[in-house]
Amino acid sequence: MTSMNKLLATFLLTIIISPALTLSSLAQDTSEDTKVELNQISCRELLKMPGKDKELTFIFFHGFMTAKKNQMVIDRIALREATDKITDYCINNPDSMLMTAFEEYR
Image 1 (cartoon, rainbow, N blue to C red):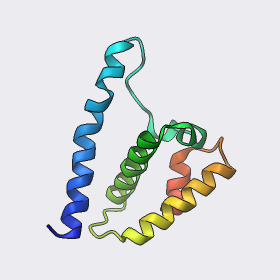
Image 2: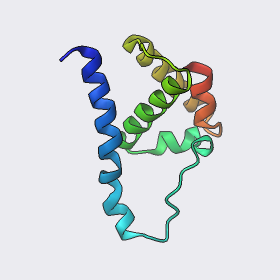
Image 3: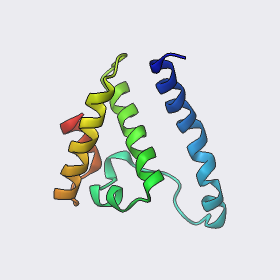
């Protein structure tokens, strides 16, 4: 399998599996609002996420920005560098919105 196919397969698998991973937490507390406004997630919220949740959030937002820019080719090194810049931005600006960081550095 080519590198691009592996990346695409990983991305799609993440989108399919991530809701299943959170089903147990949703089943425990049905009073929680299940909708997420992407432009309302703060950098602080990202920084406080457990490792796997943070990783999945980065994957989702990178995918979102890739689709938003109608990109069919991605540069893995550039994505890694953008992730580092977004993380640094969030550390320095925890009250900023995560979408703002992605729009700036992605």
